[in-house]
Length: 385
Image 1 (cartoon, rainbow, N blue to C red):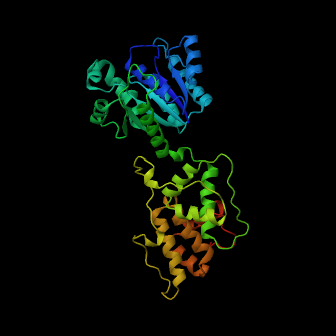
Image 2 (image 1 turned 30 degrees about the vertical axis):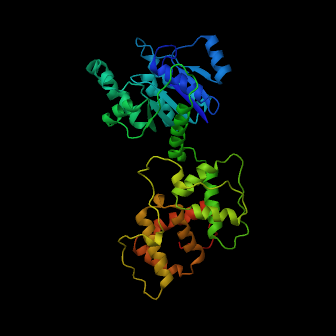
Image 3 (image 1 turned 120 degrees about the vertical axis):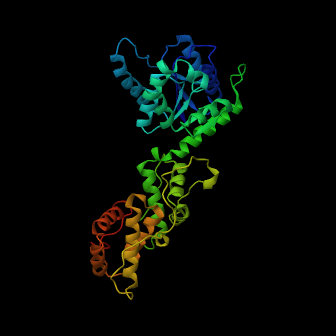
């Protein structure tokens, strides 16, 4: 895992934020490739010490000059360059009321990276009340509120800070770290809690990192499970794919048993499958609705196909239910039902096509057929239209 930490000034020895960041960097140095982004240059010998002792690479982006408005226009490009150079898996922003911090968080989020914010006491009532009208309120409206709300999660250094953040109702995803010990650079409880928070954030945002190869591999495994005789289907696992991401994707698509079955059919060795509830993740409000397509209860137009045409009515009903859910909201398991409908169920295409036209489902069915051909390799000759 590669983590980019941002802190405005890493030279303030007595700062609680600097102390916490030092403890995080030292505690995770053996399990994480840490990078430090700061707005204040560090001494050369200190940079060398950080690199040699903890493996930390330091990057500097000077803070904008208040008297020069053009420095605000160029700051985003400099941050973008650092992100492109480091290629982090996760960006951890430390501090509040800092415009550059908001730029780092926003640029990282636009690159679909996990972003974590640690206010380090900056959102306490005492901090908010200090120069609220002149300083804090404008910054809240311009960037501070959006930085906290849009980040993947917020890390609080203690329960008191967690309560302050929750009382502001800016963020529900708050992780609490243990107390930082000032005389101990390497702190195992902090490292364990921090790595758990990182992993939870990454697992909750795995779709941002899921590659096309990984997504297609899951589809191929599932297709191998539901197909009977397709000698041309040979699933191979390319180098560098993440089975953790693929397992999470298969779970969310309600297709994990099919994935395992497909791997067995293709005689592909896969790592042990973990249980879904064993991986802590944040609640996904946009999660797809699980369950078989045939069990979906919804109001459909009455078919004019006579009842004795059983398979034809099944085809119209399944496609009608799929249209109610929406093509992009169908789970992989539901796609297998549609694939099985086109591939294995014998029905009269002309009768079904006539009824689908009447119900204005022709264009939807064409899009379904296109997707089945592109991603699920439905052979030619099984289309309705």
